[in-house]
Image (cartoon, rainbow, N blue to C red; front, side, top):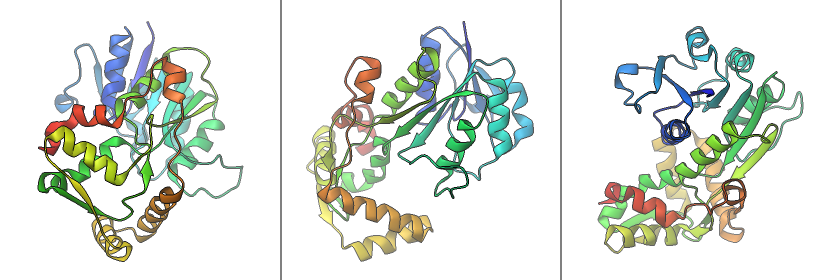
Length: 277
């Protein structure tokens, strides 16, 4: 029986990684800030720690065979990656669709920084480069309840992925051979426009829901006010605009690795439909 450390163990993906490892018969250690409130499955060892505080990580890492690493968007601490790599034979890192960086090339995201640190470490590694999560559609819940979701680029086609598929691929990569050095781009099985996505949510929630187009300038103002990062908003809007003419890529990674199709967006909605009612 192998022992695995799961970071982000109470998050959208991490909690399913924990469950998948437990169901497969492995010993699971969860890195959490508050073990008393973690609400983890029976048999999971909750260890207090924080990726922002390297001195807290040693007890969690001691004796582990592998680590599922989710970086929470905080500044990158190279010493954390070094510490993880010094203990684990294999690290599965939840990344996003980014390009490999050459040595000395400036990173444009923390994902690239962490990937480069792992590539240069002593540990084996696997990168799960996930397309946008279907869970981001929860931001539309209030609009769905009102029957109208407002935003730009109704015709942008997305290949959103179910968080359970990311978790299933992570567990597979951690617990089976042949994944060291792999960069897996994981997506949903289909590309659907924003308008189609909200229609599907409405159908499953039992109400008619439509997408109402908002001018890009107004959408940008609202997004900057909500997120406080104009550069990030501009980059997001540019990506959405590109998906109008060129749909977001669809890969067969989930089916190829797991032997079954990736879950559809409709199946994701059914799993979360109460959030839209």
